[in-house]
Image 1 (cartoon, rainbow, N blue to C red):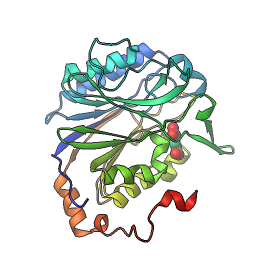
Image 2: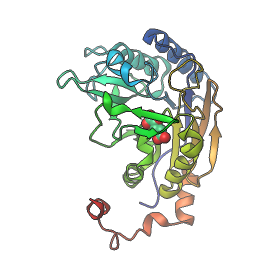
Image 3: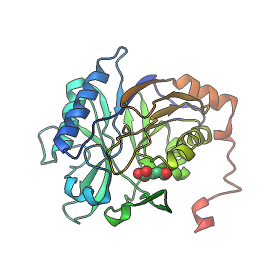
Length: 298
Ligand SMILES: O=C(O)CCC(=O)C(=O)O
């Protein structure tokens, strides 16, 4: 998989602030930020929203805020869908951009299960990819950070990539970044970048936010980006902020503080391919020595 065919593109990560318990207010905040980012020159090709931006980040809220998400391929006005999905279609179409819609709580009408779901739209507003968070954030660091997504959520069962005119992109959501297999598989499938809508916290953010992105980037010689909400003093869950883009050498290209902001990065495919040429780990893997990692450890 040494070199990758892709074109240079511009990425924008929207570190949304002023998120409240009002879904419609949160949609207005996102709409305004996408519009603003789309006016920048050069215009971003791909805009990213953070994890769970239309609802409070609380297991007790996910069911109430959950929405129906239609199938991949569904187009404008063809299907019944939730107000956030409809709004994201409009944001992509009205601004002529690809949109990774962060994540929202999704209700599966048939099973009544709730997922933490990322949806992606092309510039026509067509829903082109759905990623349901695979690894649920269940941790307990006594006195610091306790969270149990599995109280309300069900984990997704598949990995997600999608094609754009500027290259293939892999998706994960937040805690998914701690499981390196996902990024490695995406890289081996030809992805130029792994993008994770995320909402780390003020305990694990300082410990691992940057390290994990640099690790996934260096191991796989791809771009890695995480898009967080801004910190919100009144929220029950304090997001870390620090939205970031890392290049295939492991350099942090751009990093936000914890305030509301938008950051931009130019994705340079030549740099990715030069990195792989100079440090040819992608063609030096010894699958004869470690043929099937999953089998070894199960
Ligand atoms: O992995 C971490 O430290 C944070 C993960 C997280 O906040 C999440 O998955 O929502």
